[in-house]
Image (cartoon, rainbow, N blue to C red):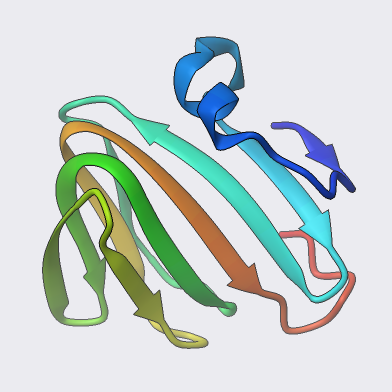
Length: 109
C-alpha cells in the first residue's frame, strides 16, 4: 500500500503498470484508493464507516451495497452511504477508483 499526499495521479500509469496495481492516497477529509481485481477475485462484503464513491474505469463485475447488487463495467459509478456494507466481485479484470469521505480527517483505517 502506498500512502502519500499526492495531488496528481496519472490514471493511465495506474492502469498500465502492474507495479502500481493498488495505492492509497490520503487527503484532508477523503481517501482515494486505486484497485485492480483479477477475474474471480473479490473484496468480501464488509462494514465500512465511510461514505464511498466507486468509479469503474474498466472491466466487469458486481458491486454490492447493502442488499443491492449492481452489475458494473467501465463508466459506472456506485455510491455507498456511511455505515453501509459493501463488496466487489470481479468477472473480468477490473480497475476501480474508490473515493471515501472520511468521518474524521485523521481516519486512515
